[in-house]
Image 1 (cartoon, rainbow, N blue to C red):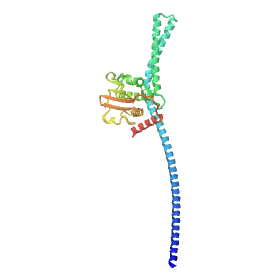
Image 2: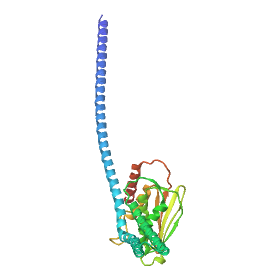
Image 3: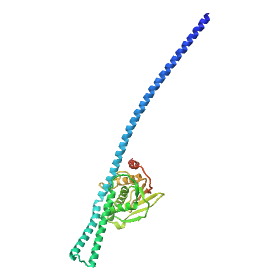
Image 4: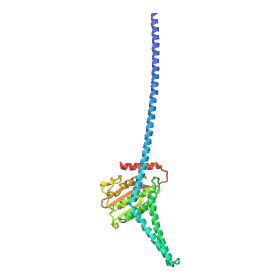
Length: 333
C-alpha cells in the first residue's frame, strides 16, 4: 500500500512537472514571439528612417547635379562669349569692309542714275548692274558672318543631331579669319565626310578655340612663312577625324599632359582664360568623341578630334548633359 501511495505521488509530481515545463515553454514561446514582433517593428522603423534619409540625400544630390549642370552650361557659354569678345575688333573689321564696299557701289549707282536721268547707255547700264551685283556679294558676306555668329550664340543645350563638320569648320574659319590673316595662310583639306553625332554650336566652339590657339602660337607679321592647316577624313569604323595643325612655337613636353586641364595656360596674364582647351575636351568627350594633341617645340602642333558618325536613334538627353558634367569633373580631378 505504501509503495502504491508513493507511486501515485510520483506520478502526480511528474504530471505537475510536465505541466510546469509546458507552461514555461509556452511562456518562452510567447516571450520569443513578442520579442520577435518588437524587433521586427524596430527593424521596419529603422528601414523607413534610412529610406527617408536616402531619398532626402538623393534629392539633394539631384539638386546639386542640376546646379552643376547649369554652372557647366554657363561656363561653356561664358567661354564662347569670351572668345567672341577677343575677336570683336576683327569681326568689326570683317563686317565693316563689305559694308563700305556696299555703300560705295550703291553711291555709284545713285550718282549714275541722277547723271543719266534714267537714260543710261547700254555700257552704263552694264556698269550699274555689275556695281549692284558687287554690292549684293558684299551683303552676302555680312549675312554669312552674322549667321556664323548666331550659331555660336545658340542657347546652351546638349540636343544631339547630325552635324556637317566641314560646314562647322568653315563657319569657325570665317569668324576667326581676321585673327588668322596676319599670322599664317590657311590650308584647307576638307573632304566630304558623313555627318557626325553632335551639337552644331558647341562643335563650332571647339573648332574656333582650336583655330585661335593655332593663331596665337604664331607671331604676327610672317603670314607667308607659316601655315594653319585644317583637314577632315574618315578614321576608324564609324569615326570622322578633324585635324587642326599649325607651324607655330609648339608645346613643351612637360605641358602636354596638362594642356586640357581647366585654367592651365602658358599665355601671358590677361590673354585667354585657360578654359578653351578644357572646354574643347569636355564637349568632345561628352559627344562620345576623343581629342588628342601632338607637338614639337619650334615645329608646330596638331590637335586631332575624332567624332562618331551620326546614327538616327533616340538618345537620352539628360544623360548626355550628365556625361558632359562628369567629363569636366574628370579633367578637374
